[in-house]
Length: 260
Image (tube, rainbow, N blue to C red; front, side, top):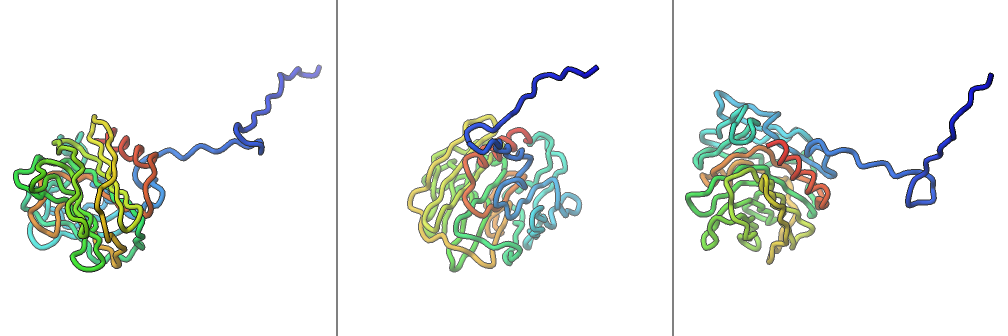
C-alpha cells in the first residue's frame, strides 16, 4: 500500500524575486566579530605579568604587543570583584603605561574607530587620560580618552592634537564604561558612550581638525604618554578600520554590559 504524504510546503524568501531568503547576520560573540577589526586587547588573553605586575599585553587579532614602559607596571587581577569577577588591569595614577610605538602589523586608514572598555574612577585631579592612538609629532593623530578637564570637571571627553580637548558633556561615573570614538575622516569624529545599566549616548565632537593617518601606528593603554594621568581599570580596547555601524556599536555595548 502506498504511503499517503502530507502537503508539500515551498518556502521562498521575502522581499525579493529570487526565491532565496537573505541569510541572517552571524551572531556577535565578542569584538573579534566586528567588521574591520584590526586589533583587540582583552584581559582574558595575552597577559604577561610577574606577581600581578604587568609586563606586556598581546592583541588577539594581529598579535600586537603592548609593553610596559619604564617604571612599575600596572596591577593585574585575574578575578576582579569590581568588574563582575572578570580579569582587569588597574592604574592607581602612578603606574607605567602599556605601549607600542612601531605597529606595522596592520595599516591605518583615515576612517577608523577606537574603543575602550574601562572602569573610571572619579579623578582627584584634572586631565585624567587613558591612552589610545598617540603621537606627539606629525601627522597629528592623538586620540586619548579623558575623564576630566580643567574648566570642565568630571566630564568624559577625547583629546585631539589638532582641535584640543573635546568634552561630551557626559559626567564621569564610577562604573564600567564602553567608550567608542568613530572617525569618518580627517576633520570629524563622534563619541558613543554607554555606562553599564545606563542609556547609550552618541553625538559629534565639534571643531576636530587635522586628524590624519599615522604610520607606524602608535597605541597605548592604561595611561597617557607614560605619565600618572589615569586612575581606574581597563579591561579591553581595540582598533577598527572604518566607521563602526550603529548595529556594531550596539552589539559591543551589549556584550560589555553582559560580561562586566
